Image 1: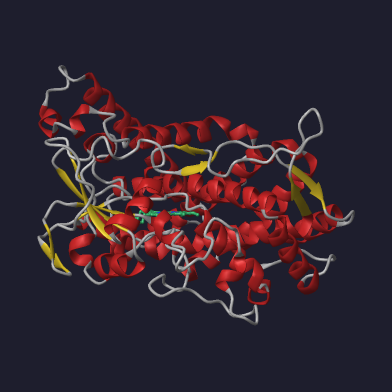
Image 2: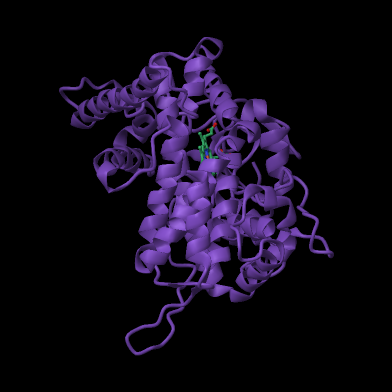
Length: 485
Ligand code: HEM
């Protein structure tokens, strides 16, 4: 095994890995132990990978044995029946779900959602102009709404839909908290899974939740199917699942969970990336001003940015990548498990080893991204400022925030499109600056104060001032939205 911090007998490195922001420690250890090192968490061997090349070697070039996930009994099996794609092993069911998910959210398929993203971005900005203090809530609601529209073809979510959104959010929170290491004893002592339900309240409740949530997701899918029977053709993921059911061979239950997973995986990750964007604009106003200068030059003030403008907005494209690089919402992605003994660069990585890609460390590698804490979209442009550049082994994206190999994020095209158009529309219409306290002093948020839900890491709530950039912005937005109605 590659060398790592020595640890103590039996418990190994249990006390060395901090509970809060462990990715910072992992990045620090890279200096001492190199880009690949090992840890021992009370007998569980772990490899931490800190370089683009090694992640590409293992997750891309040896994907057959590096695409499994560690077992999560409560979150991945009891609560979700082994079909929660994000946590499920490298199984036949995962393959079927992955194929269907990929087809529904590929670059091509995601393009059909562009009109929805465009409209949603415009409505969100109008909403924020009217309620500038509620910007965070409005943005979160808009992101949730876009994903539900894309998945189920539902109209824009509003206050009236609170009950159903609360139900789905509660489901996501339940699974995320069940996935926190040590939250359930069964994940430490797997034999407990076989206890009869009368002896294990947690198991009984988990199975009951699974039943209820299966019913909920099946009901949502049925709603789409019923609309199709009536002759409507909603543009949404579930409609495409209905059409391709035979080909993908998904059962009713698998199709229902697959659709539900898209919300779980996509809503919080995208809305937290939007928060990171606001934070970056507030802390690095020069980047904001450059982006706005580009928007003024290319778009002007008489129309809003659209997806067709993407090719002419290199700085906004680069800014979108820089948001994802600067603050990856999953700094350690979701771990993998090696399914065979593997020899790599003279090391033997035994079957069953957990592999953690340190996304934070790679995105903040000072040799690739000088002064990594600075927010500089220019990193992703050539010297002319017009051509996109990216370090090798990053699939041309520049960062590795969407993960790797066969398990790379299914929704990355959808997310990139949503972020691009939201950032462009917000910057076109608004200025983002620091809020002031009661004494009139500017409040500078600390970007290292984070909230870690177990899977998604985002900034701690911070105040900010959102103001309209020019008086006509409101009217132009309203006019363009009326045209798309
Ligand atoms: C900024 C937004 C997003 C970020 C940063 C993000 C990031 C990630 C990461 C790091 C993974 C794990 C990859 C790996 O193991 O190598 C992942 C998996 C996944 N993501 Fe995303 N994601 C985002 C948005 C979305 C959206 C919008 C959707 C759906 C519409 C989505 C669906 C999924 C699914 C289904 C998986 C599980 C893939 C698998 O295990 O095979 N994500 N995402």
